[in-house]
Length: 263
Image (tube, rainbow, N blue to C red; front, side, top):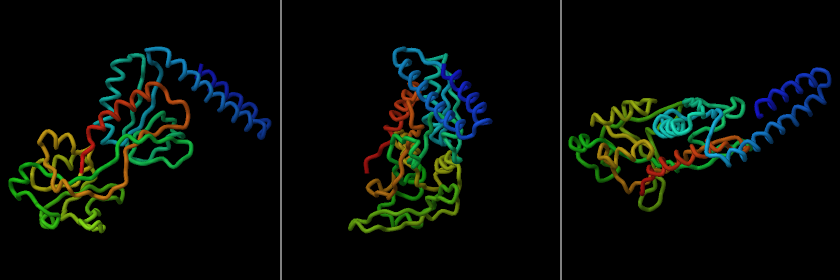
């Protein structure tokens, strides 16, 4: 039904727009509203059934997509074989509406009024190292003690965590720069380098929480609060969200909730 309506609206737009430009534009706008109405009706209808079908187009930042989104998508597709999910992993900017994505997972809050952003996790930066790093260099008891220790930093598109701000005991904002002579834009390689025990790093909570719980990483200076104002968002067009997309958001949010760390 939605597909036939979309085809009809395009035909109306083309036919009317060619002969009567102003009228064609108005018809096209009304046809778009009709498409939206059909989507909303379909969303209401699928609430009454336990089966899911159709196609869901999703885009996600690469690291979050690999670690949190893909496992949830795979489980959803296993459960509902008539559902097709097209998952695109990319850290590049994506025009969600123009490229017709139903859902996106990103570390930014949408400013476009045509997009809705649902906060899934507040991002925290922590300082961490492998147990072998601690064996070699000892456990630093202050941020000053970190100054001479080797580190590795993450950098992407001009943004880096080679330095960060933090409040001191008096609440005054201070700045700290890592002693990092190695910078990389790949989170997986970053983690592998730290596992060797030669450098510490400043990962996000969703990168390091599980490894810390499993003892693969040790959090350094756990009482230090690094200033950051970022969150992981589920972003989607301002329209009725398909049931499959809502289910997926809940699964990803639940997985991310385990990444919150008390500071």
